[in-house]
Image (cartoon, rainbow, N blue to C red; front, side, top):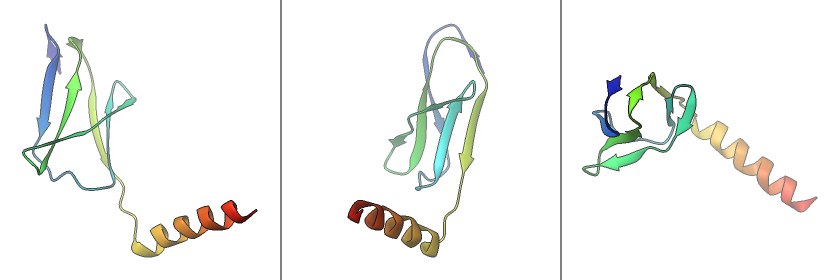
Length: 74
């Protein structure tokens, strides 16, 4: 994307856990727009924008939670 001023880019996809956004390969915060969609701040100039979704199953999330709890015990 290219702009002479900073912009707020809205991506009309549901903002669910698992989404990440990148501006020129650097992760950037995702804001919820209209209680559903995603938005990011894009600085002025020419930039490459990427959105990436990683799906984790409930089993994977539970495993990650247990690793953190076990690590806390030691």
